[in-house]
Figure 1 (cartoon, one colour):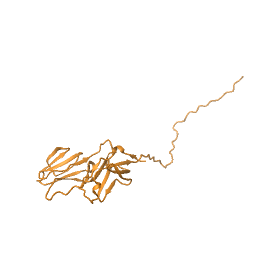
Figure 2 (cartoon, one colour):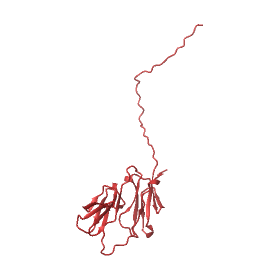
Figure 3 (cartoon, one colour):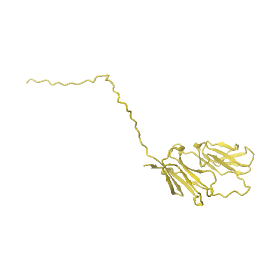
Figure 4 (cartoon, one colour):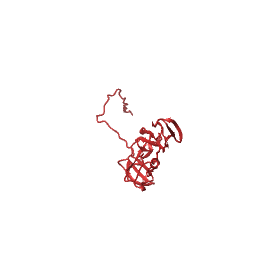
Amino acid sequence: MGVPWGSHVGPTLPLAGWCPLSPTGAQTTQLLVEPPWRPAALWDRVTLTCQGSGTAGATTWYKDGQRWWQEGPDRLTVTENGTYECNRTGTGLSLPMRVLDGPTCSPDWLVLQVSARALLEGDTVTLRCRRWRDNALSSVSFYHEEKKLQELRDGTELSLSPLQLQHSGCYSCRGWKSESVTVTVHTNLPPLSFPELFTVPVLEVHSEPTNG
C-alpha cells in the first residue's frame, strides 16, 4: 500500500488564463520562461527572457520585489529560486515569474505546474505534478478547489480540454510513494570449504574402577 504525502501537497496553482485580449496598439513587457512551465523549477535549468520596447540592454531585473540588476541583459539563466520581474523603459514592468526549488532536506516536496502561456476558452491545458528533482511517484491525485478530480497510477500529468470558464480556480496535487521492499541476492555457487588450520582439543574423561 502506498504512503500518502498528506503534508506535502503541491502548492495551489491559480489558472488565471481567461484574460481579455490587450487593446489594439497596447504593448506590455513580457517575461518568457524556458522550459515553458509555471511556476518554474530551478533544477530544469530555467532561462528567462524579457521582451518589450526600448533599446537593447535597457532591461532592469527585480528579484523578490527588490531591484536586482540594472541595465542587464534581455536573457538570463536563473541560478537562485525567487520571484523575478523585468522592466523595459518603453513598456513597463512585467508580470512576476516564480522559480521554485524544494528544501534540500525533503525529497517529498511536490510542485504543480501549468503551461506558462495565456489560457483561453477552448484550449487544452496540461497540469503536471512533480516530486522534487523528479524523484519517482507511484500515484498522483489532482484537486480543483479542494475537490478531487482524478487519481493517476501510471502518470503525473492531467489534461483539461476544452477549457471552459468553470475550469478557472486553484488546483493542487497530492502524491504517493510505494512502500520500500528489501531485495537480497544470493549466489548460486556451492559454499566454499576451508581446511582446519588448528585442531580442536578434545577433553576425554575416563572412569577408573574403584577397589572396595
